[in-house]
Length: 313
Image (cartoon, one colour):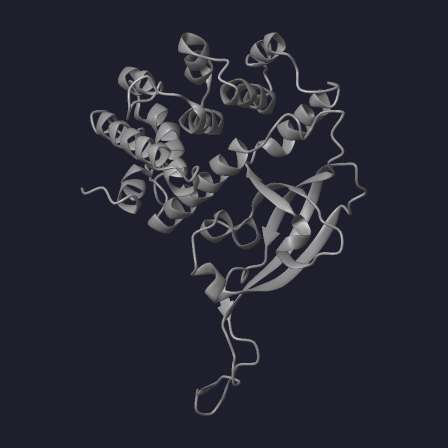
């Protein structure tokens, strides 16, 4: 048996990188407004468990001759991606959703080749995960799930608790309450409050960085992504997050910041300045990380993210 502190193999690191990339992006889009009492949104929180062959490619109607091994493909046969498995409801609002349900559909392979979308880089229906979605009646396949958000694993518990609290609010709370909610023990509540304040430019200086100083893991990564998306830098190419990088004394404190920058470059707003700022920020995070020793037992995704962004070794 390998030592417990060995990092996972490369394919596992790649899966983590793309899972976190999509998760950060999806969580950065969640808003308080869609969960408040005045919202009429129906939503479901579920854990997806794909079948072993989900995400694999096939050609419908193709067959193999058992004697010759020759593959026979029907005329006009095109490769498709299979998505199949089960998803189990953890919570729901405004809709009577079954506790556990199977899913199965195919998607054209050529559609995935036309551009990188979150579902293409990491699909919970092929690789698993916790999702929040707003179902669409009368649809099939992926469309039946409507807007799908990939969430951190521990949000299977904290998200329903946060939603229950937010539903006690008639609308989006005033800024004073939002600032108090930044200290909430529920990470989802703290994040939703942070997003509201950052998007409306109601935080600056220490008020902006203090929540990030306290946050760890996924919460820190999504908060950093929100800053990259919404801040108005004092100087071109800089970000308020630079101070966190300069003060970092442990490599694992930098990994959420690197993941946030990677996500912003991959799926950020279609504006060159945001993408360029996020990319430059990733470079500064990487430089600082190289000065610090690796954290034992923690897989280091920085080299892979750097290669995917085109940084040289």
